[in-house]
Image (tube, rainbow, N blue to C red; front, top):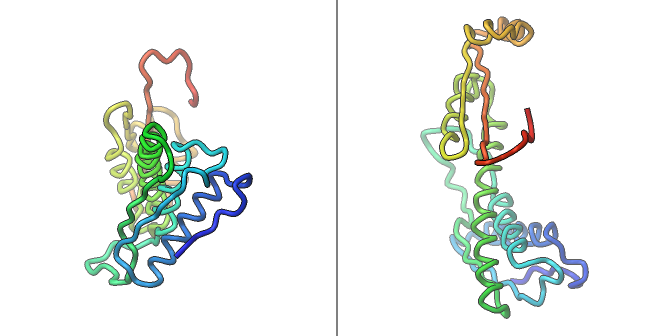
Length: 190
């Protein structure tokens, strides 16, 4: 099958992202386990190969996203689970940039899926403790995680947050994630 991008002058990353999601949805609809997506370099217009790769990887992953509650039995719904993507008609540098973009897009999409799963969990599963554990799994490299318990929150004077938490049977947690860049001169967010 084909997925049209429209006039080359109107091709942008959002259009590529949506086209990849449409291709993934169609493959899932017909029940294939794997498919290939071929992109013509000339069809990218002003979009750089790296940005195109990122958009396509995000579209494939996020177009396939379906929340699945934790369960002993996984849904047996047929989905297209594997996709090979290739850029044709570009030079070696463009193909390398496209491949790098695919890699970066897969990372970004995995992060989005991680956040969507947390958001979609019911509150009896996404408790403050479970959320803190999820945040701790992100730690490593440049990311640091600190989890404050009730005592630490009291010491810092977080009365309003503790007041809200008083209505819950779950112990409160306050999660601090820090992304540190070596030699950074300013804070981006506090």
